[in-house]
Length: 386
Image 1 (cartoon, rainbow, N blue to C red):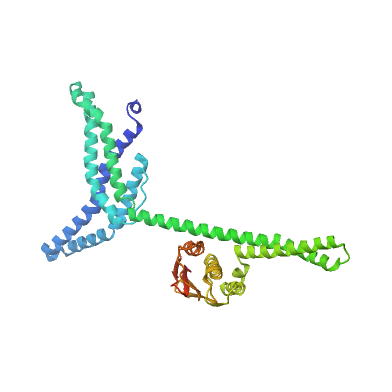
Image 2 (cartoon, helix red, strand yellow; image 1 turned 90 degrees about the vertical axis):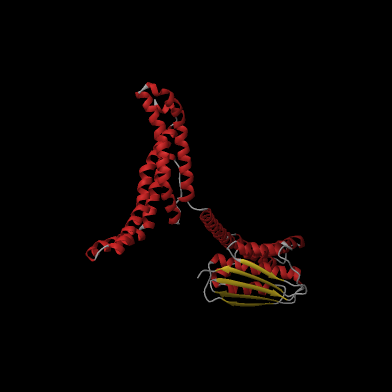
């Protein structure tokens, strides 16, 4: 019957307001009354007590110190109780805050919210009950009956707002958690992408590439041995052999672009030396990294150097280049320098933007120094653990 008169949320808001009174009084007593009372007693005993009251003075001092030191734990425990009240009665989830002093502020405020809120709600409902007992008070009870649900919800909203502001995380804490979550998600995506590239590279190397090698070898043997075939048939074998050889070369280049197996097997030094050997300009490589970095970081460093050397070959008009890789504290530093014409800008082409994006994918940094006339220096620093 009662639920037909008012929605369930009204009764839950009423219970929430009434429960706030004892909780507010208890929270205020534990967070303010006990430490302040013990401290006042300790100060009074130190100033005015006689020598015979030394034991009592010591007790007050110990209580004061204990209450003060345990205050953060008491505050967090009370906050957990309040969060359960909001969750059970209002279906409001309030995430915990790491700063106990903000929660302390709510427990101080909860006394005033609890007393005023419970009193307002109780007065409204009591007037209604009074009218049931004495019909003469019906004129007063009617407005109170109308105001009771509204008052309960207002108190619940005010208490919820205070709890969200003080019991919940601050705006900075929310942003910090959000940044950590996004960073973790991005790292997981980068790692998953790198693992998928490795899988595709292995599948192509062990499957399609091996079959192409076998096909090219068979066509090569046919080309060498079947010399007495008619000219059209022999030309068809020659063309097929050339196409298979070209397809194999392109597949190897594609597989190398996905993920070089030498990077996993022998590390950055050998992998970057292979890039330098294939570069159209002379490249000097110097790698000084005593310990291996995470595979994702090594892969980013490899592709940064690969793309940087490609840019040099296409745009720099350089006669030589140098690649230097070393470890600076917990960061892997990659420096690519050329003696070209310079004048490059970070937004001047997709190649340099790609380098910056690769570095950013693992929370790395990208810097470009390219005055007109050269030289151009690309510096990338990647986190490499401690």
